[in-house]
Length: 249
Length: 209
Image (tube, rainbow over the protein chains, first blue to last red):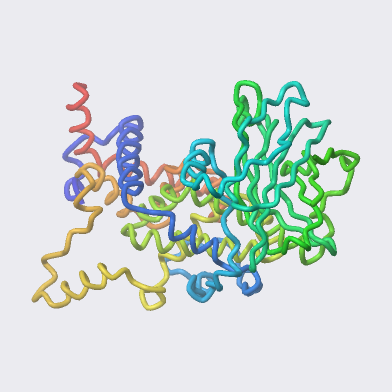
């Protein structure tokens, strides 16, 4: 311990110097962590944990028992189970919804062979007078069925590409007329009133997609466990519940 | 083209849907948790390192904390009852780190090798250098050691304050009397001012004070 052996040799620091020293060392430690630590493992684990296998009684421990010298048994029990036991088969995994920024989407589209690109005729034009939609709409799902709709109130337009899979349905969306700040979700509603959120996104204030000055649509990919024939409709909503657009399937 | 609308007033599809609605609620919460993980991961790892963990241990502890959070989300209302998720994750990660060695889920391979090597040495005089020790400046190491030398309560209080939590928030999270927390922080700072005074001399010299 530096300086601990003879603490009185130097004058103690003042508050300002201590804060400065702590902040500098702490920032250095953060940079060090950022260089080496990687959240991917945790993200992957969280993405593959299946909620159905959770033991509900695990979660009832008080958060912080005390700060005694040793952790208590109750403290330990909450962390008892392992990520490995909670892994589930790939089919049951719910994929993290990858919200693609315009650049990432462009890269993906570029990577898709022209042969499998599909141009969808009838992609909405300038019906709103404000939304300038792409003249060359593209979807990254080959051979996909295309749905599209516009809500005349919110002026949100969506194009949804659907590809039936054995495990469910793959989904790609393009959204126009999205003006930030907005935190939105795509909800798939299946028959028998089953529903799930399959994508979410956030657009900061003063930004938008498919709008004058920002013509690129918001592109995202998602997937759902529901089969195409079971899907009744799609709803785009804000996280507070307001309906942005309803797309019958 | 389908032109939408009369649906503007349809009830939210996730309300009152029983099992399906519950799944959707959890999907939304999990998204929130993933965002939190992406945003705060490095800070959380650093937080556990302030309590003495090396980076591998800290990452394990942080993973445990996120899994515990997910278990909370799987329990009705448990997650909602957590007032301050960022502080809660830190506390749970710390508890995970403090678990006795025998209960550790797994050890990082490198650590096992290092420990084995040390055991074989005639005395433990030669400690393998961790990547943390190699890369951090002497100043950063000294500050970290000074923090570690504090009694545990003071150490954890300081670690929370360094992450931007207020004394009141920290006291609430640690279930501690706020005045007691303030006293402990004062005490910790007094100790650190003494311990780090030699660094302060360097600092003052560097800045031409």
